[in-house]
Image 1 (cartoon, rainbow, N blue to C red):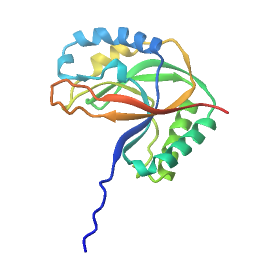
Image 2: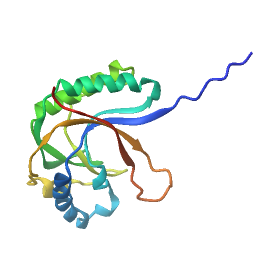
Image 3: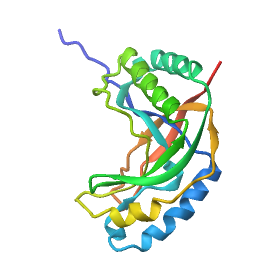
Image 4: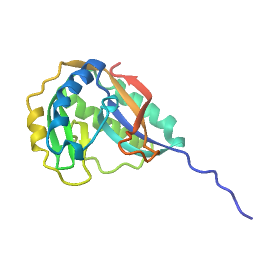
Length: 197
């Protein structure tokens, strides 16, 4: 007797803090000159509409876990007060990832990242070992090592206007499927919870 199992339905998810439109516009203006630097064409630039501060990457999550995950992320948001945040400066991970940094309530941002990671793990999502959180917003990636110093030097003095981070968002990532060069992932907010009580 054979038993037929239903396929597991998953969603590729991450928890994030999303910058407001004004912060995105400011950063877009600061990033524009970077596209004229030598080596810029070899980078895969992320679209401004997808800019975010990832708190915890959950990967492929079984839909069966979603109700528990929603409840735990809501509790994590409720236990964290709103905090000031702004895009600030820039940096790199090796020669492969160029990013914009953050300033403001970074201790609270790190705490929210820890709480989002713990919420996912307790909901049954297999999570990688939690490392010290580096707040960043990814601007560009490279498949090979690239000298990103000229890019980070331009971003060094960037100071965005502040805003109040007041929500924890759960975002679904739709990876490119067309095979068209330069196609960007598409991001969809699945749920968002206000911070604080």
